[in-house]
Image 1 (cartoon, rainbow, N blue to C red):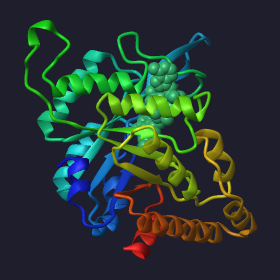
Image 2: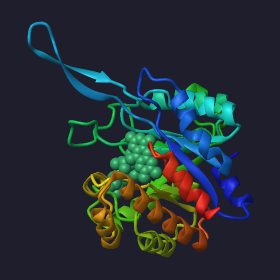
Image 3: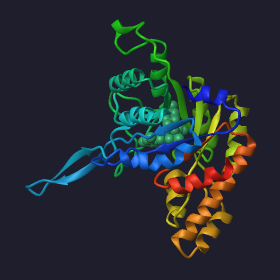
Length: 317
Ligand code: FAD
């Protein structure tokens, strides 16, 4: 079922989760262990992230270095299929521009349609580690709006090859990312919102936000979106903050502010357990306020902290 159908049919705020594929060489059981305690909340859907190859420099026998590509977390599509089978739940694979040609994207979409997946979250992706700027594949897309355009075309039976026009129409519900505190590369909020509007006008059915720790940022973002004519559902993305290190890492990587009240409480903590407790309480308060506001879905980035997410969801259900 499509994300938008889940939203239309829901009588109250629903829950969704996001997981990462395990590291290459690890078993899928880690995903089941992670999700088992969360499934009692009957998530509307589960997102599975996509991780592009990273470039590493490997030392050769002659002492020189060669650049090699390594995919550390393959398996997005397979995990979606496995989760559908294991839990009978809808899944949302993430699709990115980086590292994909248009043809590879087309083939991936065909696979997803054959498996019976109804949703995709289309993203640009970031530069690989050790590289400063995002570089598109020479035959791929530069922006999420372009990738979205390809999915919309396939939903209309338009394929890359001329003699395939009028082929089977896919029927994907398409999500895109939105940034309540601005995407880190955008020169200003207005330009970033114009980009988001371009994605919605191009056919996006809903938006999932980057994490935020101050709900007012989400409320303001929703208002700004509505003011410029974005009417699709805006699903808030929530992440538990559970270590002191994250006070520096999250703002740097994701361009998010940590409110002073929250960071002060974290800094006062003497043990990791206390930090986790403060992080859980903050997540509960955020979730409760957003639920009262009437958000359609609370989307949790579970990333290694299912227990905290479990406690937070249990407190508000
Ligand atoms: P875009 O919408 O393409 O925007 C990228 C930047 O370009 C923005 O600054 C935008 O303002 C600007 N821009 C857009 N269009 C134009 C244009 N035509 N001209 C000039 N500037 C333009 N990354 C992964 O690798 N895998 C994942 O699974 C993943 N999941 C994510 C899930 C969510 C909910 C979110 C919020 C992010 C996720 N990311 C993921 C990270 C994402 O790939 C990065 O944030 C990336 O830097 C931007 O992706 P985007 O889709 O928002 O890009």
